[in-house]
Image (cartoon, rainbow, N blue to C red; front, side, top):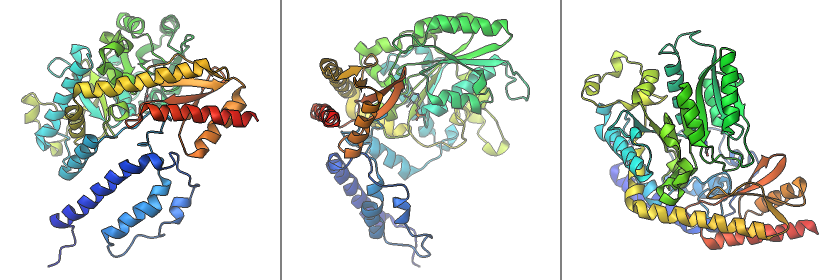
Length: 476
Ligand SMILES: *Cc1c(COP(=O)(O)O)cnc(C)c1O
């Protein structure tokens, strides 16, 4: 009887083709226009209106990858990608992800694949040591780490845990507490406001704290706002600090914020999605000074640590605070004995029930590079960004608009917002490099984020030359 599933032998054959395809992709990625050049609708218009009735050949599908899909790809893996933040992959990251796809286990409970739970807990304990995070985040203490899809989910989980703690476990009941208020700076990530909306706190209860001249949260303003809120019978329940804000790369003063939180009994969540990886290098650990005060902390290996998307690590100081907020047992979910054996079910640490075996790729990356290998790349990126900042400072046509936060440089053309915007638009339209933008105190700002895994000095140099040349052309 013919089997219409792909047989293991067919899989072996096509799998090799796909691996070859990916290897070629990495070989040539530098030559592609970084920003996809298609117009809205171009990709869909190349696709048939309905699904095929009969199965098609793998060669037809791979052919369509080249002709239909590739033109619509913006190349995040290009060394000339300097926009937003990196979304890095690596050989070991891709292969770990592939093995995870191959096994395709669903690790909701310890028993549904013990390796999925135990490897994750273990690798996150490794990270506590690798990044010199507070010992309380270790699973062997009261805390522990868990892999989430994104920092947005990590922030939402932290928010729910904080809400639960602030309402003495009543947060899941209607009308439990309508007086909760949260605090984050102007520069905080949009995912924080989104988490507050989802958690039922609401945008109106997010107090936006002003920042100082370096775009860091002003801790005095935070303290004043907390006192004002308490005087009006609001209940402050969470403060979000940021290590490396998306807009400017700013660093909130964790120590001052943390001591206020401790005194007031407020949950302190630290979002280091991008810059957290820098703590692999002892000389950059100043960015997380004061982290001892944090109740929860997250960073994204899928940004700067060469681990394929998606992979965010969330650490909590008290795992019970998190699982109290998120545990719902049903008979059909089974597996209560494993809990008594001391194993947590990670379904109680996250929003969805099901979960992928994400720790495999992280484990592969850490083992393949070793701590020293990872440190080397981070140091190179930081060095390149510092050098880029010096070039900006030395050119009278350009001005830096924020302190360099390790790998992000924010700058503008001195001729003003319109010229800076046209400059960015024409550079990105060229397809040679991809940069992104922000607004800093009314100034249209170009951001160059240096951290793509394959970026070398020559790429950064060429990017700067292109920026200067384009600016000269625009001025004509
Ligand atoms: C990138 C980033 C986020 C959002 O990351 P996701 O993982 O995509 O949700 C949040 N906060 C900061 C500081 C970031 O850099």
